Image 1 (cartoon, one colour):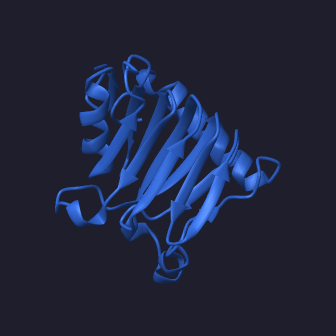
Image 2: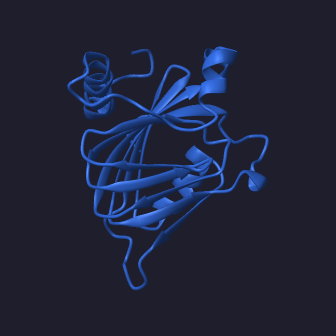
Length: 173
C-alpha cells in the first residue's frame, strides 16, 4: 500500500480485492494457472475510482443476485490497453481488442471473457452523476468509438496518465 488512496493487490489478494472494488464477481483462471501475474492497482480520484488490471486470460462473471448494499454503485468505463476480450451483457456481445473501450452498467449481469493476457483500465463513475436518459442508454453496453476518435483519445490518455502517476499523488490531488 502506498497511500490509503492507492492500493495494489497481486497473487492471492487479487481475487478478494477485485470483489471489494467491483462487487460480487467471480473470476476463473485456467486450471493449474497460478495467479502470479494478476495485478490490480487502484486509486481513488474524488468520487471516482480508477483501477488497472494486468492478468492472464480469465473469465469474469457478475451476478446481480448477490449484490450487497455496500457494493459500489458505479457505471464502469473499461479501456482495453492490450489483449483480446469478449464482453456480453443483455444479449449484446462485443469483442474488445487493444485500444477498444466500452461503458456499461455492472448492476446488470455480464460476462467478460479475457481471451489472452490483458491490460485493462477501469474507471468507476458514481451512478448519481448520470442523468436518467444516459442510464437508460446503458441498459446494454455502449462501445466507445476507436482511439482515433478525439474524445476516446482524451479519456484514454487521462486514464493512463492518472494510473501511471497514482502513487505520486497525495490525497488532496
